[in-house]
Length: 178
Image (cartoon, rainbow, N blue to C red):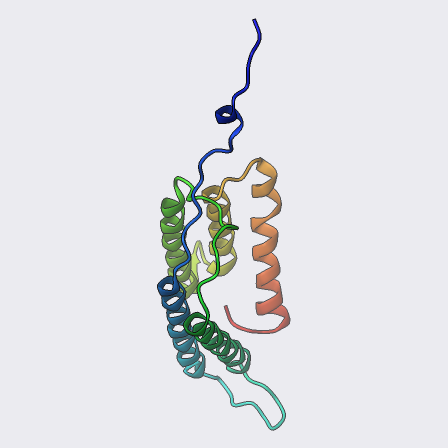
């Protein structure tokens, strides 16, 4: 008994790459432009405790710079999307199952993180507890779970150190209230 291999057996699985779409490119660039415009409005409305002195920067500076840079890049992408044909999509992977569920779970986790962050502090058992490090640790652990951590090490060595590093950098070193 010999096994014969036919051309059909060796063919790659049929994976269709998405077709290029100018409309998709324009919609994505327009959404990015709108989002960065919202970020700029929010950056300009940051309330300051004290105005910066001459030659100093205040809390509005970097968010404004990033928003303006984002607006510039979004405009450039919009111009490219309108002027040029849509790029080919052969480098994209096929749609994975559970992708929409993961995106939805990420959006919900992010919204809950922002709510917990805005609460700021709570007083429990006579102690004032800053919620940012706790909320950031839980948020990062949830994201790791959503996107498939493969071992306990991801939970042990990533969320807590990253949350504490962020807290120490911004709250303690830079004295930016979280």
